[in-house]
Length: 310
Image (cartoon, rainbow, N blue to C red):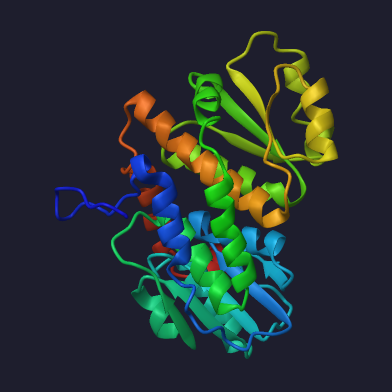
């Protein structure tokens, strides 16, 4: 169960000491939600930790998912707008633009302006850190678009994924700068890991998609000798296997070979835990995000988002 800080104003945070129970509870929260009659293309939009759910949905469901952080030219009937706060400038802008062109907007949010601007709302628990709300957001999103089978598989992924490898992963990364590589459906897990290292452990971490990375950013690893940078390969596929063999100093994090839901959700579950443990080891304030808050203030202050965002 999510536990509250003694300070009444502090956010509700995930309890790392009851990690499996926290995730199972979160993923089970929307099992009884009645799905909407969603069909055809579904456009999913969101930023940061909310937006990564769109990438997960694209890879673990059989739905025709289009994911973008900003409006698209296509005119899908349904838009799944994800913003934990409900006030994310980019998501609000995108949802309004797509609704103007006839789309039905489903908001996955804890409140804010987005809830008022949507045709349907799935309410998230209030008071959480947005990044900690990931399993709730995933549960709500899968339930409302009619993917209960995948939701059950996600719960199974958590129960079948061991946290034992976390200690070794923490040891390999601590004091280094991870450059994370992945491909295929594991890209969502890799991007999420990068985000969690940045926000929770306050670490520089970078992500690059294979095979694009083969044409540029892997080269320094062959020339730098001893370096603080460490290549992290995530996934079970051909590219992950081969890259882990030829890339100097590569550390390969594999998922149990099962299916896409179990591999992606199980990896996110494990790697989120790793980011918590790295934060603990480094003794940093996992909750505070002064830089991100200032960035959000800049974006929200734009008078003309469409014209000035570039």
